[in-house]
View: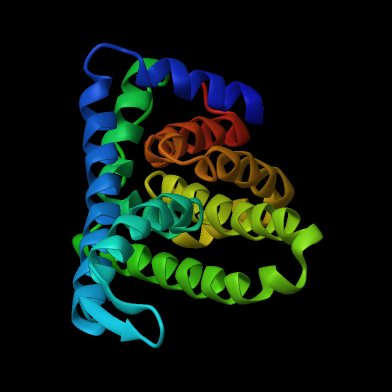
Length: 231
């Protein structure tokens, strides 16, 4: 069920016209990472002097420039962790478009979708983003002390958080909130496994730019597979 959902999602993203949605998601994700890098460079320029002198060595210059260059590599590495909250932050922007594209092709006989209000969408997006951001900041402080177990902690934690977020947001389109939450509770292990599988490519720099849109498509398929709906 999980593998087939992601296989269908990859195929959907290769359909004519789908790359517009993919491009939008990639541009948003890349834009946020660039904004973080620019903010880091500005902070370095503000805090670090351009040069300073050391005893017996003399003056060392272009310190802030060198740190700015190094920070590009740091941001690329940090994207392994940053892309998890980035995926969460942008889910609300493109989930509706991706889900609609998937359902038009695979489930054309479904009744009209229950439109989320702007307030509902913003509330869910902010809440999910806050939970994932705080959880990953805490996890980052723990990783150095449990290095052999760090990958299991990363995939286990984010599998749970991403699975819950993406599945519930897909379910909220088609079900009342109480019913969607009940459905999630009954299928928590399957959804966690799907979230963990989504977290794997999120840990690969550059590849992770495409994953939020793939996750939105994959969890739309997973929701329909679990509920037994067929187009």
